Image (cartoon, rainbow, N blue to C red; front, side, top):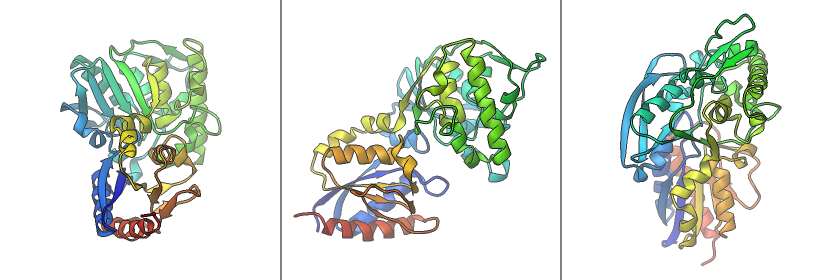
Length: 359
């Protein structure tokens, strides 16, 4: 069986294993199965983004800003060149910064991200690439905009409190300034801001109960309505506007930026399509939980699309897996996997998969 070339695409298992841990565990499993394995550390704009593009970075810097509840945090920034900075928003306003009992999207804010953008722009960045995955916020990017001088008031002219919970009372927006740097947001989902498939879909995982979900959804609808009255209309319907609790919308409206699919952006930088044209017998992709949403802009879906298009078979390894396409073999199992569990599943399933390949 030795000599089979396996290309492993690793991504972080949220809350349990880093992208590097996933990549190394699957690599060990593939080696035990007798495969020649190459590992790509990847991301769709969330956890692991800076690790995925680490070979392309010319330097890293660290900047003090504020976290999702106003506490001080130090955020790493990667630089692709002297004028292009890359930021993971989750390291400024993400769930990973909060214990479960402190997750509250009614109060969490993106203000620290706006401060960070200003900081890196002052350091010479003319372009800031922002990964949107893993946020703890539902404020539509308003907190970010406030750090740029925007004011949000209610019907009595009072300044709204931070967080998505106050958006329901939004009456007026007073424009501030746009950042001097061009903003490019990497989205891991294609959801619009509002509606049944809007940002509300992800509110529960940020700590919102049913009543809070409704309040947050109505608040984002209010933000879209007020914004339409003072700027370009229809931005709330843009694919990805609902990413990161509406931060995608905020990048468009307040920042004058653009949204791109994070998975495609990362895979292009890793030259994934070119690697598929080399001798690859099998692509193995690992994801903590695969479901219907995995095919809606996330990394695994993009890997499947590109590999199938290149005629390379794909094997999925995921602790939780449902709605897997018929042409994809997969290995799954209950519980939260350790690195050792992942290695065992990889070794067994890759060996079985390779036996099915011709040659």
